[in-house]
Image (tube, rainbow, N blue to C red; front, side, top):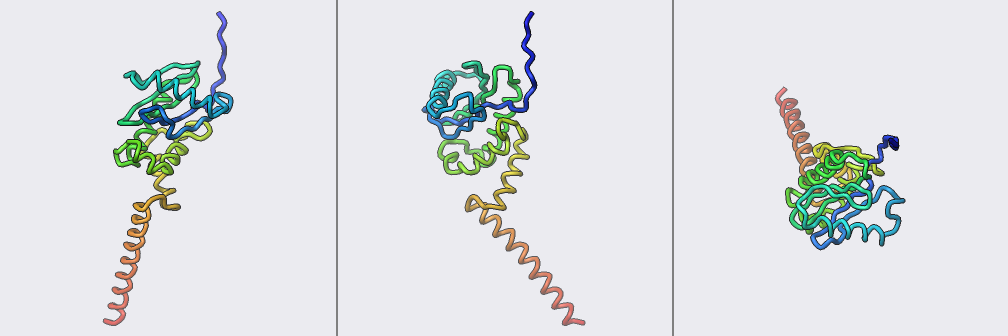
Length: 189
């Protein structure tokens, strides 16, 4: 019996993309440049997957020698693509991490409008989970923590700016209160 010995690889994810309920691309990242090198081939692949999955009630599909795990929410479809030999549970862990992280960032409002309004944060989430096809993180809490840390360094939204200002005001208030106490005690001596 011939068996092909496959070398283990860290490069488990071939692509991640999010489509709307019409099958239009909202976000995509392809990590294997040989898989679908042109934009046209990528969009044709996405259309094929969407046509196969948008009415199905499954979580996994096989197409063109690839394993695809997917999830839908309101008017969005989330896809994670791996090779045919890839462990479906690993791909599903990436998909669940992506969905849960976005759910927290978008305040449980995972829909097209909110996703487009916060696209910069969505790309940060994808980049924290996967880098070059290598899975870096599968815990949504860790992803959120890393994204929020970066948001504090480079504010992305009015909320993070307001949060940063309120933290600075609280620190300033504490310093002023301490100064008042020191002046009071120095006068009373």
